[in-house]
Length: 308
Image 1 (cartoon, rainbow, N blue to C red):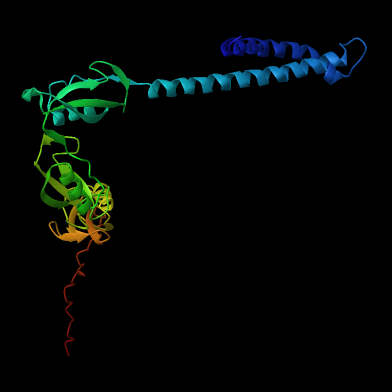
Image 2: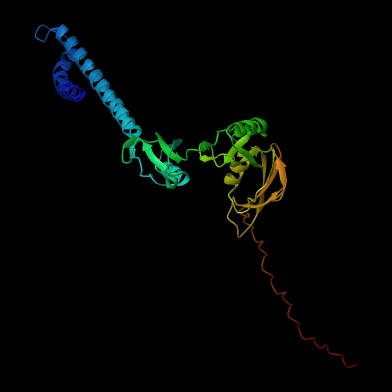
């Protein structure tokens, strides 16, 4: 018997049980006599009712848990087809793989065909194969007989990276600095060409090193939330101040200090001035003025002068 059948049977029992109980309750209320059913039957009936309720509740809980598990399995089992990237340049192929929700991993494969150098020769799994999201797809990148693979020196010190590049038969090109939240200052963030790319021997490889000092970008016009998150990711401290503005959306950065283009280091503080809605001001009301009233003037009264 599966969970659905158990729940159904228990539900039927639960529906019929009140009728049986209704016939037994009067004996419990009016007293017990020899004409009524044996007490043990009443007790047994009550126990069965309680058991039925428990069974129904447990069955419903089991069904709910099973449904949640099925939903999780359906979500995690979502699959995508490996896109066709054969013949594409490595960089374009890696972008297509990533856009499909997959992870690209390049491996060099020697070829005598010059047109295939730097391009995808095949993939593992192959085109159209259904795989789970975030699965790794190996790209076989064509390289010439005399080519070598750019070593992965990410996270190494500049000195160690330079040595690894030279040991691979390559030359160290231009060394540049950039901001990175993934590696410590002084460590290599990436190379150009990127690691795994087949190149001719003696090819110069540019090296990018994480710098503790970097140029501050402009955050004017961004939301306070976005600007704060970006600055925090760079290792900077953020202070927010608000200023009333009528024609700017509340929460928008209107200026910053230090200004864009300033050299800053991790741990420095940036002040963001953010717009906020002006407070409503009440207009004072004045009591109406009344024109002064002029008392009416009375004509002067003449007095008679007595005649002597």
